[in-house]
Image 1 (cartoon, rainbow, N blue to C red):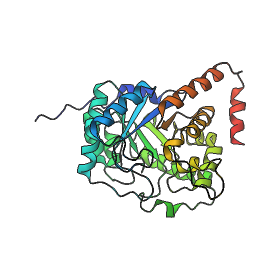
Image 2 (cartoon, one colour):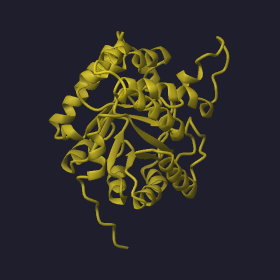
Image 3 (spheres, helix red, strand yellow):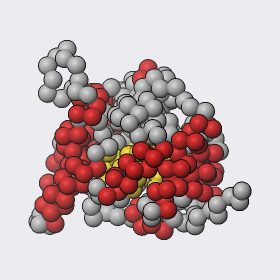
Image 4 (cartoon, rainbow, N blue to C red):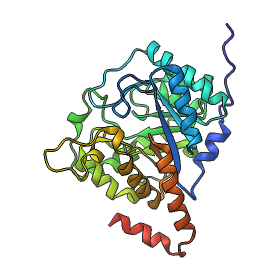
Length: 304
């Protein structure tokens, strides 16, 4: 069978989105996994995942993020073949619909196949550290690349949740990763950074980063925030010792983090329930459009 022709590596739709600065965009999550913390495999079957991806886009997502490997704490990695089996039909179908698709993977071979199938952004939670082939390939093909703050795979990452000052340490380590990626040839205009909430971070670390979102602009790159349905949100308002809310019951709290991200001027939020975040961001946008010229001073107050 003839292999599909590779798409234009410049990915004009994706790079246009990367240049957006006047509003916060929405990335919708499509987990094609049996063990995701957020949906428990609800979209694991191919047709269900494709339908869900279309629903995510209809709800207002600018980007749909397709992933075939769970990165919840303790998760074991699928084989390359299994990851490809999970994601490629979904990427192919959504890209054929005209969606801007990002492939959520740490493997260069999966990223390559997904781009050939129509993905135009690579979202690597390891920031290119898990696979030495990833960064040279992304750089050579001038692909948009999302690099997260990462200290190791899911099976051991929480043992690395040790910081002197989590905000300063994350900004410094992400800055070092940014410099390495740019030195390796990744286009500065194609690079997005993600502070990695929940990855080698406990609840206090996550809240410290949320309280200091404007400081992430010091990195000089667009910022993606992925707080959606994470465990630290499930504990908000719960009595000490009480079980956290189930992941699927954390969307109200997630919308609050989306508002914080938009008020801090972040580029994009990655969420599971797109409709609620898309609606709340229209409210933020309406307020900002009617704000006085010194609104930057107001937004800056979030950093204090």
